[in-house]
Length: 107
Image 1 (cartoon, rainbow, N blue to C red):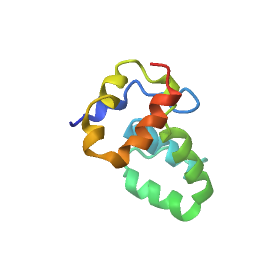
Image 2 (cartoon, rainbow, N blue to C red; image 1 turned 60 degrees about the vertical axis):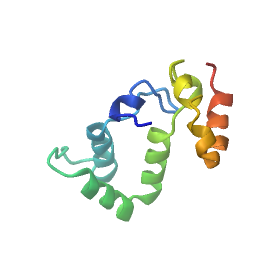
Image 3 (cartoon, rainbow, N blue to C red; image 1 turned 90 degrees about the vertical axis):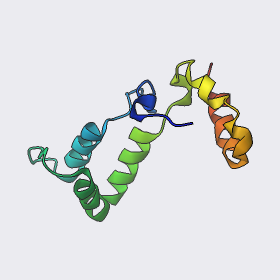
Image 4 (tube, helix red, strand yellow; image 1 turned 135 degrees about the horizontal axis):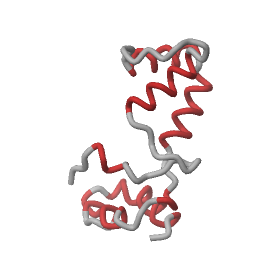
């Protein structure tokens, strides 16, 4: 099964915010690295990430964990269909992670 980029559209992070798009994440990384500089939309996310990795590692770790960790309890009901799909029987190593997600959610 494949999902597109929009699959996470309704997912929320631990602070209840929608997961960031690439453009939004690049902007947040920019603010971390260059808080007093105007945002440069032409900079690549890879370059900005590398600056953060080399100069703001603790802040980068916190930003990535907070913005890219999904609050499983906030997932809409339709996600249950994907987690219940029989692919878990084909990839047994994924069962523990899926079980944690389903246990914390309120489908």
